[in-house]
Length: 368
View 1: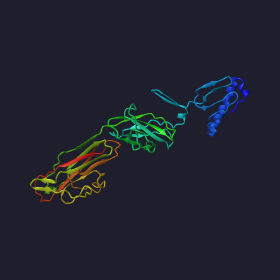
View 2: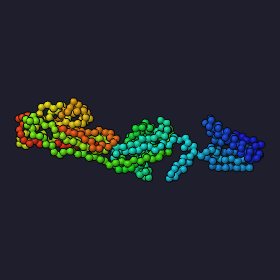
View 3: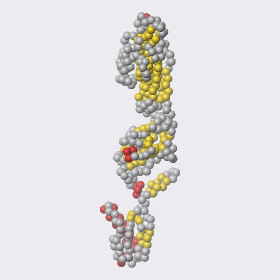
View 4: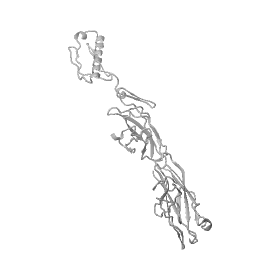
């Protein structure tokens, strides 16, 4: 690009105007063609060794011309205070939108996990998101949520996931947390290599204490005397099991007996023959139970209640058979959930008269 001597000896203000027009025209060509010019040609009056477009940084003058060394807008700026944050320049203009603060809660009052939902800020569906997490509001503890929803010290490429990959509107649980701890998270968006946003505003949530209470309403069950007036049968006795827990994967109550109903030195009353996995309607003699849990693990879910009540005999093997449960995931803590175990005993009129006893052990097993 040459500028004649006639222009060079004119008034300096005219030279500024002409140079500005030429430079702006060159900028148009760069944007249009995608080419960059490394060096300007020389003339008898001046030589431009190099130039670029960016933030204004220098003003060079001589007898014949004056030139700003770099022309254009600010490329990068980051202003922050306690109350606001402003990102300036072309770098931030071409970046993805900074996501709004995510949603972070503990709906199940869990002790080892918290629930998060990303807010996209209208970024494209193919946008990837990374999540930073801290137990001290990013003072010293800065970690990341990994692609398996656990916490790690480093952020890898595969830890970036789409909105759908982070559970979409349903969200995801981050696991492996410490109980009674407040965690803070923030999210940033990424698309390709050079479009990563800054981190979003933060959101915080607190884990609870691991909780479990379990009770049996009556420590002792006494059957009615078995005689001809009740046809040597009693099915009126029950035990109520009450459970509260925030175990994310629920709980199971197993039951077993220490022995058959036994009268020392006299004899025993046999257990009802049907097993827990396949209870049946009552027939014949023995000692057994049924449960009102219609969604029970260990076989067909409603095996005790379908067409029932159906009965099974107690096992003596540890850890026992399931008689009540609540499978996970638990999104709301279980509070005072009750199931009823109903016992039945029936003997023949030839059964020796005596006091028969056994112990039934109920064991609750939470799954966190």
